[in-house]
Length: 296
Image (cartoon, rainbow, N blue to C red; front, side, top):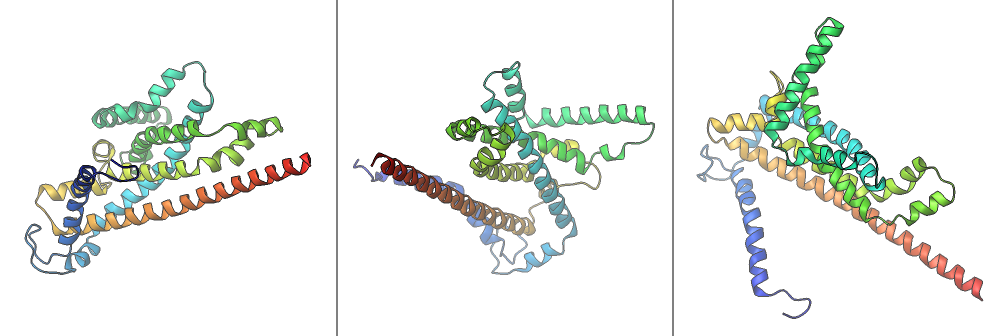
């Protein structure tokens, strides 16, 4: 095989892999415009199911609740995951390092059933303890938005920590060391130097957290209560009663929204990377010119 060229076998494998991933999505999008109530029988082009979905209050309220939980839990997980990843990456050795790393990554390898059950038992115990101390009902700990938020934050934090820690491990610490030699405090070094460098990883972790939160069903089933059903729960309950054309429409809208969000985030991240590379090249040229001038 010549350098720079792909063999026919690799091309076929690439085509089959992409077809396996995207053909079901294309079929789903096409059948979202189906006029028939039977989701597997094409009855002609129509947008009637889009109109009916926009008037389905149950799905709209569940989608709004899922979106709020996803954004809030992802923001909290980004903050906690960044701190945990920074501690594991920059503080090489501290007492309990191995235990801390294992506890942070445990939600990734632990079954969702165990995570959801343990979170439910913890919330019940804390609620009972607070009721005994305060002497009144702790309504904000009832199963609903807040409890789902806690569960999703716990789940997303583990994945975001891995993303941030990997990015920090790849960074050149010479800039941080130079700033430290010039007398900058660690907090200023983090916000001025480290944070802008890991901003693409933070954005990627935020998108990953939103995806995990919107996709979660098992943990949410343990932590949700009456009137707090998320979008995956509503979809699952409707699918159990039979395939509904509105589910194709909902999936199509989610594909379009997520795809647009990913493209926009990638665009801004690439702009940041390009800008940073240009600034580094300009700094290197200025340094080279200064060295050449001093030598002459």
